[in-house]
Amino acid sequence: MRIDIHNLTKIIKGNKVIDNINITMESGKVYGLCGYNGCGKTMLMRLISGLILPTEGTISYDGKNLGKQFDFPPSIGILIENPSFLDSRSGFDNLMLLASIKGIADKEKVISSLKKVGLNPNDKKKFRKYSLGMKQRLGIASAIMESPELIILDEPTNALDSDGVELTKKLIREECKRGALVIMTCHDKEILEDVCDTIYSIEHGRIIDERCHLR
Image (cartoon, rainbow, N blue to C red; front, side, top):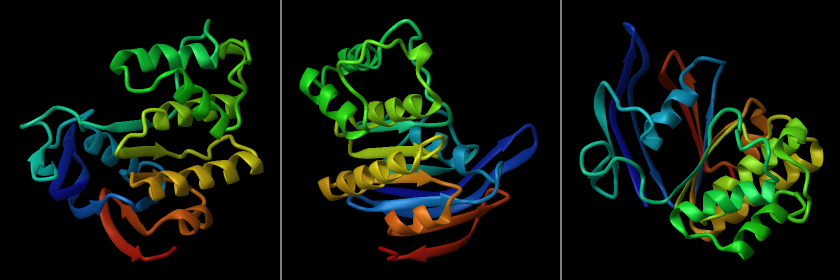
């Protein structure tokens, strides 16, 4: 997969929240986005995911324009902001419900994804009783369970303890090695530098710096 972002701009209520971004991303690499809260990181992820449309510019996947030739990336796993699931269901049941929509991930894949993020597939605890860290782990599991070509993770290490952070870093490396294109944000620059091939620094919706080949 190759993503080409050309002259991407998003204006909301007269404010230019994404300002003329031009980048190219390829499969098998991890791309980090860093910057202060409100700089445009999550907005850029929403645009790449097809959740919102740009005011100007284009996002293309292998030469096909998002929002014109197709509405959403064909193979994507997303964790943007706080993960939300059915409160009355267990983590396993929630993922099985999500997996039934496309029919890509079977029971064994769901179990494997839960184990990868450090959750017990046999735990009957309801989602409403999950700690913040457990909720975050379940959100990550939902993003990877279908082995998507594109994985978008917004602050994946948020609320995780040190073991959870290491598990997440390992998982991202594994997904990259599998051939996925991973885009992530993180307030901890050390984590970004540890797992990313390229880091884009964003300020006022613009890319002000690009650091490549970090791993």
